[in-house]
Image 1 (tube, rainbow, N blue to C red):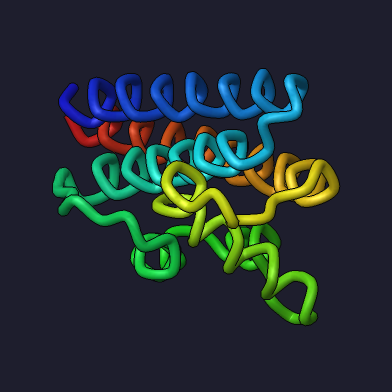
Image 2 (cartoon, helix red, strand yellow):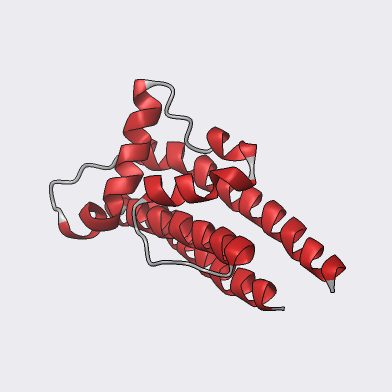
Amino acid sequence: LQAQEYFDEKFEKGNFFFDDAIANNEKKRFQMASFYLHQACENYFYAIRLVYTQQNSKQHNLTKLLNSVKKYSTDFVKVFPQDTPEEKRLFELIKAAYVNGRYDPDFVVTKEDIDALVPKVELLRDITKRICEERIGEYGEME
């Protein structure tokens, strides 16, 4: 099943990036941890898009990626709620990490930032796993 292959590849890649984020956080490399968290999110979103649509355009903007998958689960609002200034700041930080986490020496990311973002990315991972497995199960029933 093509959807299963897409899921396996992108979900595993997301998990690798998540593991790298944790390792970099432990080594106090917070900028790189933020970049790896961004990459984990990107791959979880890719997994969802591929499982549900069999299509995925290369996209790095987490706002656009999040908006493209919101229709598949109401739980996404819990990941990056953006209902307070701090929630908005954290989302902007992880969005900016794609470029700034690698290239901007003045990009400030603290241990507290990473510690606040890790549970959000874990929640995204868990939602991704659940809804993709449900969808793949539905495809199996159609055959």
